[in-house]
Length: 561
Image (cartoon, one colour):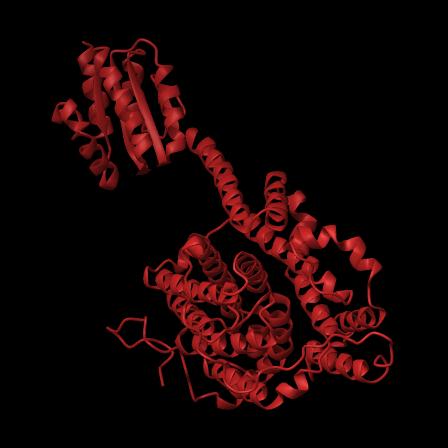
């Protein structure tokens, strides 16, 4: 067993997750409860993805088991999630369309590659950077995925297969889907949604609404709704026993697409898992290990792909329920996987009778829950530009491409952020030639500037000088009139970017060319080293760079005489 914290002198990136025997009752109860919730969700996602119910079930077992064993968040429950299922659905549809015979094998290879990417992210210690995206982009991306899941379930909700062409194909076929709707299956789907939305809180504590909907919907389909003229579509037979090992399959014409899909799937899994880990931390008042969590998630997806399971990530619902039920160590996630595996091996015959319309209702409700309705309602009140970015990301996610949505969203958000920061930092670039200026200097230094009678200029920079400030440096320098001496004061510069450093160099060189006495003072640390590497100090006598601001002003004033 591993302890909650790493021993002194030992790397925190230990092999196993935090597994403790101090809370066996709570961990086992948390595991049982999470398994009960996972069963209907895994079935729904397996059928929705096109890989089959068995893939969803074994994905829930394998991703959950290995992520619990080797992850970095003790209470995290990992399994197929709505966002991961949406991407996997697109991967399967695309690859099987290009190669019907080997498309599914390539899709599971993509799952393996996604796991490899996640493991690499963990070893490269990129965990803390993964979720550092603007919330407007994350919200828009997740909401877009939610809308995709809702749209893709419209066909099964109406008693028909998902039309070809994904989201656009479903939207174009919607009139036909409505016209050919199967009444019995529509009733089952509506009843499922009603149960999911209207189950009283007291009853939810006894049994999850998803399981209640699954049981009631199946019973109704076998009794009251079984006498209609049309046969209700069901899951069908699920292969019993353990899944077979699937060797990776690569096809050169599809290799680049497989790698891109794997990178998207891996990155989405990282974001999904780490955001859920943050939620777990806030409830348990602990701190997860992001890099170790990515390694655990990667191992889970790698093994799941090897055995034909769906990809997974940290699931918010399962994690919260696990914690609320008493789970406190990885033993809860391990017990959940074992319990779920026993149920799968023993009850696949019963699961075969579950109507697909019920699973469509469950998956559609998941899509509704993924959409960030709270932020959508108030985003425009917080920031118009932020709201527009979110709407753009939603539209691109649903109608164009997941990669394009995130890439364009992050690019625009960063450009706006940099522009705002540059505008604020530009106010820290000031030049004055009299003691009446708005500068943070002493009274003696103000008197020295007054003695210069406008012929001594103090050019002062403050704070972080990012590349966007270079324009302000150039603009302020160009505004300099006639003067005999310039003191460049870098005392309060906390960071000098490359572009800003080059702008300072240009200003110094231009002042030297015009015959002015130039002083560069106050640079320390990385700022000083950057200017040294640029060779700026070689262009000036050492007595004009190794002194302080006050001494530089004294020498500049004395030089006027």
